[in-house]
Image 1: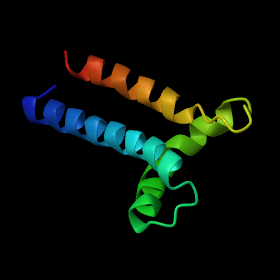
Image 2: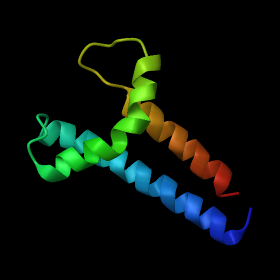
Image 3: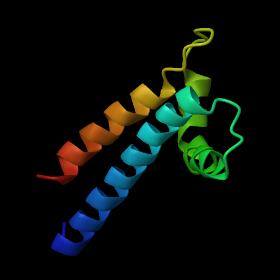
Length: 82
């Protein structure tokens, strides 16, 4: 993989990882999503979290999809970083 392409993919993965982390923090601070920044973070991360959420069994109020996505992104970062 070319140097530029590898760095670009790493950057995209890191940005998505940070957005998912921001979504977790936003869910603790502003669970109703009244803040425009909170709504934007939810809008950007929902296309990645929704398919994972559909595959996982229902756990009530505990949403494990951000954890699963962050683990997958970390593994992807490890593979791309080689």
